[in-house]
Amino acid sequence: MSVERNGKTEPEKKDRPLIVSYSYSGNTHRIAQGLQKLTGGDWIEVHPWQPYPMAFPELLEQVKREVQSGFHPGLLPVSGSPRPYSVIFVGSPNWCGTIAPPMASWLYKNNLDGKIILPFYSHCGGVSGDLRGTVSRLCPKADVREALGVIGDGGDDLTEILRQWLIKTKNGGKCNENP
Image 1: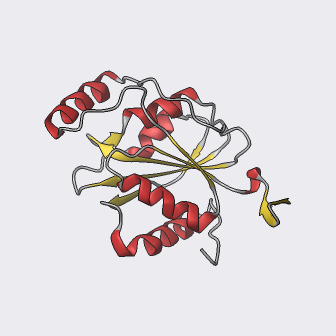
Image 2: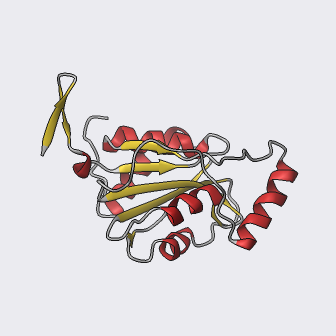
């Protein structure tokens, strides 16, 4: 079903995916942007109430503490709710082999029962961990599909990487043919 907005016919929200992402360095942001172009989905960015340190040693120390303790930081308010969507892409940097605490916090605070969740993450070649498993534990009644790991921001191959992942995951996010 479609609705008309600003002279354009667009799918209703339930027919479009939702893309939710947290990005520290911009890599996950670029991947989410690529997904939005390919799927026509709506996009929400998650931001922690308290920003993370810019210096890497301090960042790493704080992230290790938060991940080990299962800390869910407070988030800035976002516009939009996952309620009307059946497919949700969830993006995060891979921190210490798992999703970043701000994304874990968003997942924990939202009821995603019955939703299809497609996790994606950026990384720098380190330990990938089990991000799908982490998302599954936070959303036990959701259909969590295979996670996509992208080195850095995917570079020039990003669009093709995303297309192949959408096909492999049964195209939960319906790829537009003309991005």
